[in-house]
Image 1 (cartoon, rainbow, N blue to C red):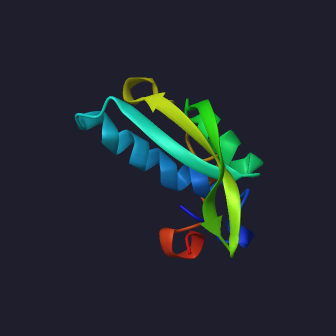
Image 2 (cartoon, rainbow, N blue to C red):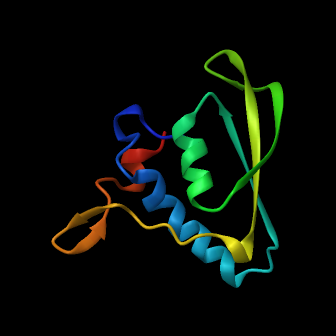
Image 3 (tube, one colour):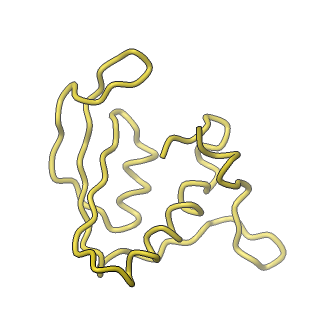
Length: 105
């Protein structure tokens, strides 16, 4: 997922990633992998919060914005995914200030 710059750091990643990870619990999936173009400390932190662990880096393999980027690879066992939840609270209900169309481009 690619997030709009104005929603980075607002909890949108967690709000959108949490339901995805929970939905995999009922599937026949053992391992989940994720690629993160570097540098991207926010995305690395998000994945680590969900229980992903780094397994390696492929150098200059990801292309975006007319440039090649290093891509860090992470893995998590489906059964060990952490149930991270959005951090903002509005009226006692945990929520995020974003919706899918607002956050992703």
